[in-house]
Image (cartoon, rainbow, N blue to C red; front, side, top):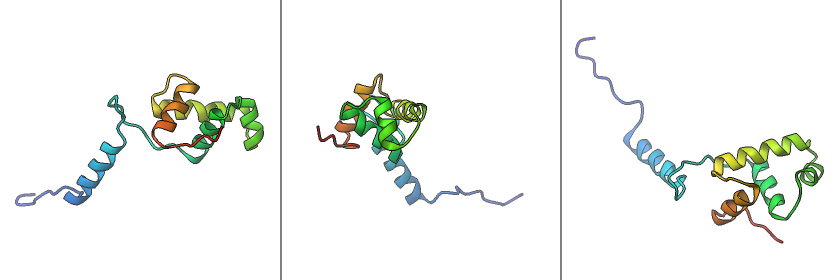
Length: 100
């Protein structure tokens, strides 16, 4: 391919937009986070209201193991070490609002 020019598949404005989004997702500790799913946010909000995983499962019509999975996934995405830490981080970032 003599004379062929390879160009980036991304437009410069798209690259800047993606870069800005990635920068906005970074935590103060420098760990990139992924957006939480609706169910992960629901589970965290109920944890913040003091509900156990069994109570959350009953309220959301899910199995307890499914709730465990959502909570574990949310904790991983937030870089949290515990349920309480996950709720604290989610509240600080405006991801959830706890009424109680």
